[in-house]
Image (tube, rainbow, N blue to C red; front, side, top):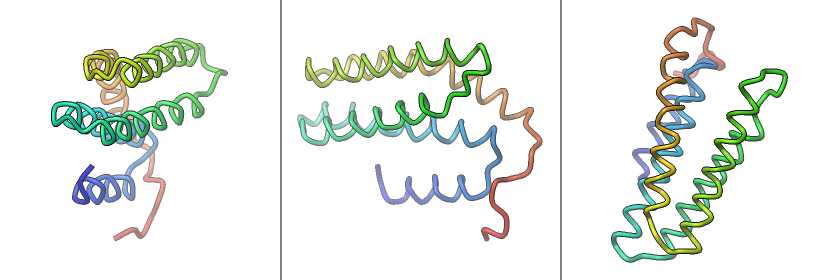
Length: 130
């Protein structure tokens, strides 16, 4: 991930509310998946492995943050486990196909979270972050 991309995510995180935060986390995940695909295309296995590992860290964070008092969390947990398995298989098989498959699985969830974030009118987490 480029330094500019990191700065953009930092800026977005500094002024987001709860709904927007999950969308930003997904955007970070997609950036890492794209980094992995690009590294694989360039034949750089170490960068590929690093990007997949970072993607898995984000997935684990999403899993850890689920609130199981809501029924939907069980379904999300299963989806995240499946994506995590795809990422593990990408490393084992040394292929970016699994990363593309992970992106497809996550795309529908992402679209739902984007729509939900549009309806979230809560205040930003941080204030005076200019």
